[in-house]
Amino acid sequence: APAGPVRAGATELNPTTRTVTLRGAPVHLRPKEFDLLHRLMSAPGQVLARRKLLQEVWGYQPGVYSRTLDVHVADLRRKLEDNPERPEHLVTVHSIGYRFDP
Image (cartoon, rainbow, N blue to C red):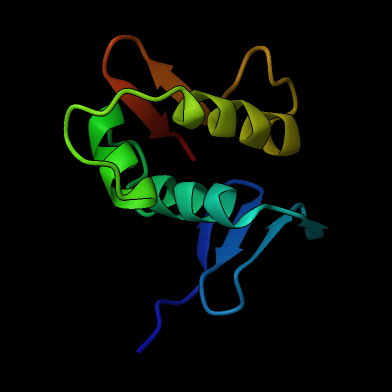
């Protein structure tokens, strides 16, 4: 059975309908933005390594380096964070990866 909605703070993600709302208002996400946010929100508070996210969300092979992850995180911050320059939810863990804090 499909997983139900994932809620964290003011953000709700529904994997069945591939929709995201912020404080009840719909947020338009590109497909990979949705996939990345779903992966991060599915492991709240856990640090997910860059290489793991690149493999799981984009299918990149180990050892491939790409800035696409950083670009997508920046785009998600602009859409979901109150202050994208000082994110509270989509947190960078220096030299490791990213974490979603509810």
